[in-house]
Length: 510
Image (cartoon, rainbow, N blue to C red; front, side):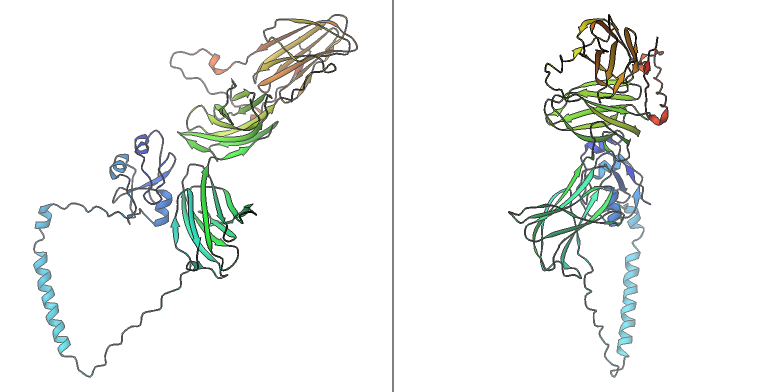
């Protein structure tokens, strides 16, 4: 088994900065690529190239242990280069000067013996029968053409390989690396009905699906998507009908994997399993539709690593508020325009991987206030400062504040002359009501996620003066614990209940 080496962005930084590429496919080397160093000529090849041709493209089949200095000295060689012959000292050549005269003497003896044999042959001997060469064998398949990611133009002609069902066929080979990118192969033609079959490195054949039909131009596009490297892929280009010929365009794309996520939905995944890797960090991407003017909160929880979240939108990077508590992180923002947004989940430290959950919460659509709906929500201090107001009979008064996951909140309302009601509404619309207790109502609750919360004050069949207070206590994290100089922070303890955080309200607590 060849000595494969996986390129590391830190340990092999000097080699990667040199910009070398695979000598056969011309694909530049990137971190996480598996490569082989040839022991004979020092050429560096992708593992997929080595396995495809049975060695290095220069014809050698012996691998050497990874040596970045030797790899840099070999340079960016192309396939077909002539191997360098080893230098032999003059003393070694001089020690074998007797070899040439001996070979000449032996050749003379052979010529004499051969002449005697031919002279003694009888003239009646039958003439030797010349062997008739066999007819050339019919090709069993088309010759493969190696292609890179991008666009390649070709044509089916009557000189191409012909299958048993009468269809002409071209064959391409593509070496996919181990970067975790998703592969998409598309074939387009306006001269014939195209057909594409992709053979995976495991030998499985995947048939293409029709993705576009242009009635105006007559062009049809078929595609095979959602495949991943590493390995050598074989692409069979042909037509749907026998005898069809014409031009076509073959496109190969490599894209970062993106998964959809819906509002109020939670997904579970493993960072590093099907992730893109860049600069030593694993990254998972999620795509969702953002609504203008509505608050969006992405929450990621993990007990295996410290997660991070970045958001990009139609205009690039999106600014927002980030909150951390233990093994969770939230990113809250309000889109300035409706469109497609992408959340990138990664780790704070390079190379970390493990299970995590991601959730998207979107605030309810804000309607224009009217006489029946009452006044808009007013900001509510989180420091315990009282807010006093008057409530009309049958009316409600909304307030708003922003919370972070793990925050412990204490809400209390006191009324004069009526029984008050108190409801806490989360970013996803979840309602936590308080049990009335005479002229007061209280809620003790730990916020499960970050975002915008609403507090609604009402009355049971009455109205009058009331006073509302809110106190917020941030959770204690590892950063709050004093440590000795040079002491590293301890990792967070694993959460209970399989990693799912389920806070419970404590109503009517003293």
